[in-house]
Length: 248
Image (cartoon, rainbow, N blue to C red; front, side):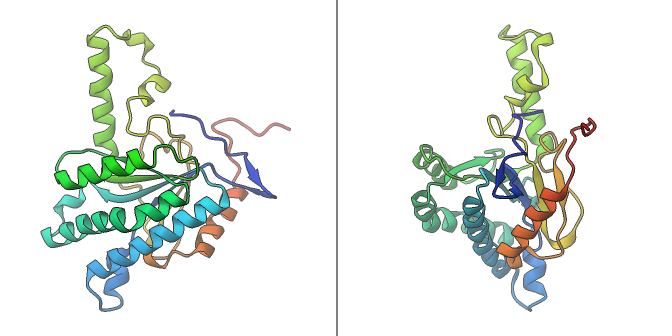
């Protein structure tokens, strides 16, 4: 397991998860049901990102991870891929200053392969410019696939063993987690997938071992503060035992 979370932290009478992750699903279907191009669904999805980040910060959530572009999304039509890349460019250019003013720290996880150089430079600048912020940690999973992440981590760990930096029997679950993209980030307490689809889709496979899951029947562009609040209330009602039993 990665860094342990602190699920018992509370705000008032409500238990607030330290780390919430969201699979932002349904942008294309949101657009199609309205007779709009898919790019409009993705654009409205960016607006939902800003709402969710603001809400998370206000509710005291420390980490919000958003699955924005998977390593499998490259198989989509080239025009849609380019729209998604342009939206990332637009988001960083337009919204980074507002996020930074609100003390948000940006971190991007995922493979750097195939990402255009200008976007890599923008990601590096966004991470550097917000590195000192102490509020919400906004983690963007871009060109991310969990199997790829785990395989890259295995290779890094194997290289360290081959170089004599660590012994094979020193490779504990905690040590291995340090080689993941999410090193230093607590495992998610709550994972939400919008649109009603009930799949994890190669997202945070290692990190979600003890996460709670919710699958609200709402497309991501329509995900409101109330939907987020309802998810937190449902999370607070769950009995998390991590494989143990509740003490009397």
